[in-house]
Length: 122
Image (cartoon, rainbow, N blue to C red; front, side, top):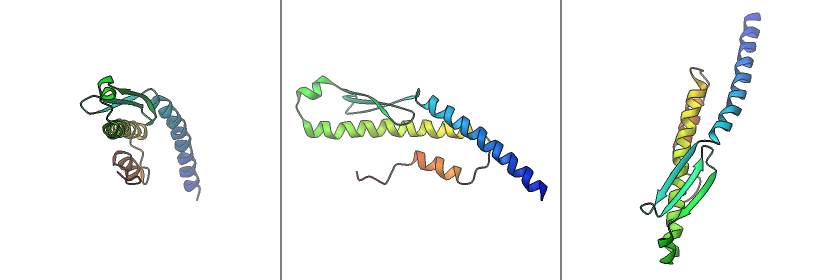
């Protein structure tokens, strides 16, 4: 009976340590940068490791063409590429954070970070 309490205490300590490491991880991910581009570099998007867009760059020649439809296609393509790279970096940081801890469902959670989302239509 007391062995179970000892295990519970150990698990609580691990959870507390994990919580503070997760906070630190999120702070570090704010400094990570991922860049996506489309149209041969005509549109470039930079996001941080949390997937927040930081910068959008559009080549002036693309604006001169006044091709709104092309621009509307290239911006999301570049943003999606940057966010996919950020998700890969986020998953890598999570793997490093957890080390050898056996957390049920963690593998599936990490995998879901790196797979394309099916929530939004293309």
